[in-house]
Image 1: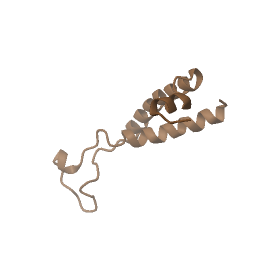
Image 2 (image 1 turned 90 degrees about the vertical axis):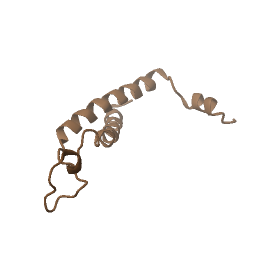
Image 3 (image 1 turned 60 degrees about the vertical axis):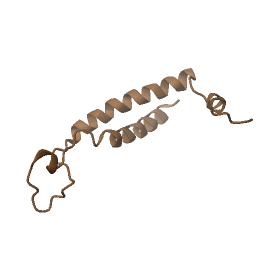
Image 4 (image 1 turned 30 degrees about the vertical axis):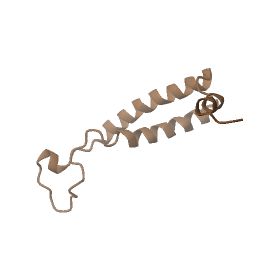
Length: 90
């Protein structure tokens, strides 16, 4: 696997991980008891921390990509294995 492919696949894992971890820890004004000001949606979070989301996404994507790369190198799960498990006739 070349460096460009590694970077592209890692970035895909990172974007997906960012969307997965985005809602964790967010609180709405109703949950915190804050007063909703004019122009602020009732459902909008009051404690959004983008750096924390980026850190969590980086950690999760590194773990997922590590598992993906190990599978790529060692061949734990292949298309033939999946066909056998699902029962696809040849």
